[in-house]
Image 1 (tube, helix red, strand yellow):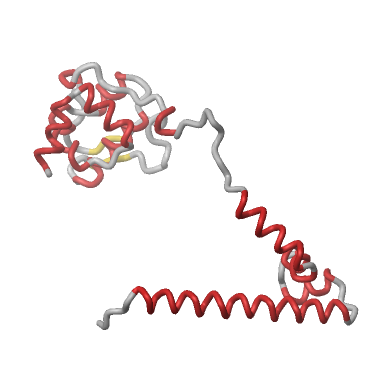
Image 2 (cartoon, helix red, strand yellow; image 1 turned 90 degrees about the horizontal axis):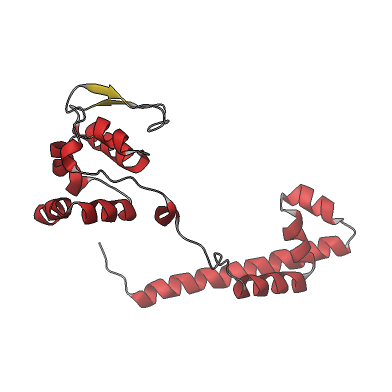
Length: 188
């Protein structure tokens, strides 16, 4: 495979942008010519399939310039008091790992308040399904009883390094149980 330079890539993008801008200008000029010849905006919209706003901006370039300028100036910002969902979600952490005596094999069906996906049946003998169930229980548990009922301490320790969890949840559990954090660093 041939190697390309950054300059070559910049050239490709520059050519695309130039031809795109030229095509847009030509299209708008043609639409304005049709409009000057008596075509109504609604007819241009119907025949071309363009939106009403696209036709409006083609017929009045000053509107496109104002719209584009406005878009550049205003990027959406979250409210000042915004906190990401992961920081607001009330993750539950077990009181002690010793109380986690959930199933370790066979097939289990999680209650609807934990798994409403329609695939709440987990074969714990299949590693992927086991890990998936642990992730669901950890992220959706609303009480320590949920954790105690569905998680097993030894399995949790074994799975911990490989579970894909929200960072806030992982941090809370590892602060409460440093041994879990140690299993992650030992696995690395």
